[in-house]
Structures are given as structure tokens and as C-alpha cells.
Image (cartoon, rainbow over all chains, first blue to last red; front, side, top):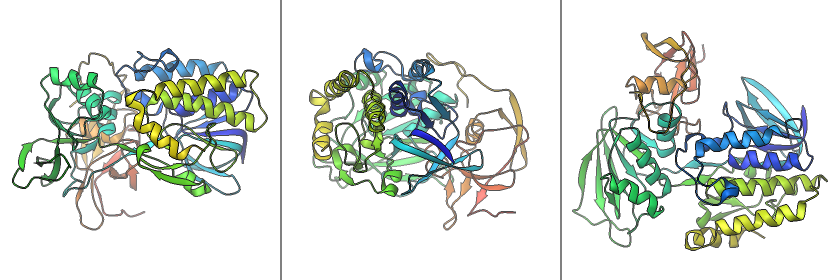
Length: 359
Length: 101
């Protein structure tokens, strides 16, 4: 049995920041991640970030894990990192079970920050399981982490920020992007990302959906249909497009299995893209000592995930009696950063969602 | 296909290693996921589903979805999107649930 003050599950932007702030407050932290390197999905984000300096705005996502690792070094006597380690379960006696390099390990933490992130959603249409149909994240991983092209031409489903950004990254890597569709009358991502790919000749086609994928062993062709303003299909408007890759970026949903297992009170919040835990402003769930941060608490951006991580780490340490001398100041700063990131019309949905879940 | 030049990224590759895919000798870079090495050589079908025998490729690339399961060194259900390639690996298409030998 491995003992620690705080176990942080997930070493993405939220988890790393939680570990740093918990350690800075004096707690011993075990940071667990199933990958071989920390950084979560940041390691494939080649675009520059928005937000303010405090969340590393105008830095590329791929450079942020290095910056955070540098900061983590200051607390290396407090933070232990466990890589290639998958958390399998979180039990009522607060034992975490972990698989690492084929070995089964048990961890007994006094408090936990769950920062497990999200998984990709998948739209339903016939043959949506054909090889050649990939999640947008997978295309990014293949292309930006391993330097392998997904195929010759790509059609993108979903025009939120991920869909638009990945389309641009495909163009950068030399892949033809045949088009981007979304169901709504207007694309969902930022205008700056949409303009970039439009300038490079990629059509953004609102009010369309995929109704069929064709191919024997792998994808060859897709059938699209036009939708009216209410997202209802218009019969007779079907047409085909040839493509060997269909990239799906229809959103993410929180990976909350461990929270369900331990019995945190969960609620379905559409605005936060799935079931998320009820929590207070300090990111503590309905079970005292279990905190959350990042996408598992509701789908948002990496910038807010980092701030949520810091807030959760700070408050989780305090819960165990490790009170940072600047606790009040830091907490107010993090809350203000989150408030600023979520202000304006872009933050409307998130604010509505949070109003239903933060108690 | 591999990306030869990229405006932002440079790719750190491991040493070249040989492995077999359904008995055929192939090359990849040590430490990259098996599925990436296969994909670079045009192999998109990694297995067939247990009940309806539908072809399976990879989908999530981060070990979430289990679409990329293959038989590696005789062991079935290996998530090839996260399992790292090593010298002399024996990689085979998985049909169905796989058998433990």
C-alpha cells in the first residue's frame, strides 16, 4: 500500500496544476497518469492559447507541459509522479487501485483530486465504425505527436474550436481538407480559427450532417444531407463526397467513472457536456476530501482547467491542514481568473451550466 | 505516410526497428505506438469485431475506446494505439475476442 497526502488522478493541465498548488501548500502529492509523459492533450496542441499571461496565453499548447514541469521541479521533494499508471478503481475505503507496467498497486491517499479529463463523443450513422473514421483527437495525436498522416483527404464533422483547429493543423501537415460541416446555422468555434481555414480554401458548411459512410474494409465515401434551421433533414438533398478519412469533432464528454464509483453526487448538465459532480467554489465534491478539476468537472478550455487545478490543489491541501500562507489571496486570484475566462458572450453556456452545479 | 517537414513541429524518432505484421516484415520507430507504425505503412484495418466481424481501425488514439485491439506477441486485446513498438514484435490482426494461449 502506497501512502500519500493527496493523490491527483490525471496529469493533464488540470492535474499538473493541482499537484503544484497542493505541494506549494506543503502536502505530499502523488500525481498519477496513464501516459508515458505528463501534459494530457496539451502535447498535441500546436496552436497558440488565448486567455491571459497567467494561463500561458500566446504560448503553444505543446510548450506548456515543459513550462509546468519546470514549475513542478521547485516541489520535487513533495511531488512524486507515477507514469504509465492507469487508475482502475476508487473504493469506498478510499483505496485507489492502479495498474502500472503489468503490476497491480494500491494507494491510500488522505484526499484526492480527480482530473481525468474527457472522452470524445461519437455521432450515430450507419457504418460509423469503418476504419478511416477517427476522432479529431486521434488525428491530432497521430499527426502532431507521431508524425504520421491520417490519410490523403479528410472531411471534418463538427465546427467547434477542435474541428476548426484540427482542420488547420491538417492543412499545415499537407493533408487536403475537403470541408467542415456542422448542424447549426453557424459554426461554433472562434471566428479567428474559421477565417484561417477559409482563407486556405476549405468550405465551412453549416446545416449538414453525415447520414452514411460507405466502404468495404475502410472508408471510401460519405453521404451528407442538408438540414433546415431546426436541424431537421431536408429530404432529397443527399449528396456524396469521396474521402478516405472522416474526422469526428462533435464534442467531448466528462470521464467521471471514478466519481460515480466512489459515490459523488452527479448531475446531467447539458451546458457542461454531460454528467458532472456537484461541487462548491473550492472544487470539492459532495464527498469531503474529493476534489475535481478540468474537463471531468465540465468541458471547457485548457486555460480554465489549469486555474481549476490550482484552485483544487490549494483547497484540497487546506482540507488536510496544509494551509498556504497566502491562501486567501491565491484563492481570490484563481476565482477571479476563472471569472475573467468565462466572461463575455463566449462564456455564456459555461456560466449557465455552472450556475446549476456549483453550490 | 509520414510527415517529412512541418512548419511548427520536429519529430523525435526512436531508432528504426523491425517487426512483423501477419508474418510480413515491417519497419517502424522504437517507442511509437504499434498502430502509428502500421498506419504509416497504410495498414488501417487492425482487427475484426467479435460478433459481426466488422473491420476495426483505431478511433481515439489514447487508449480509451478499444477499437485498435490486436494480438501482440501472442497476447490478444493489446491496445495498439498506446502500446509501444519494440524490436522483433509479432503483431497480428485480431479476429473476435482473442484466445489466451
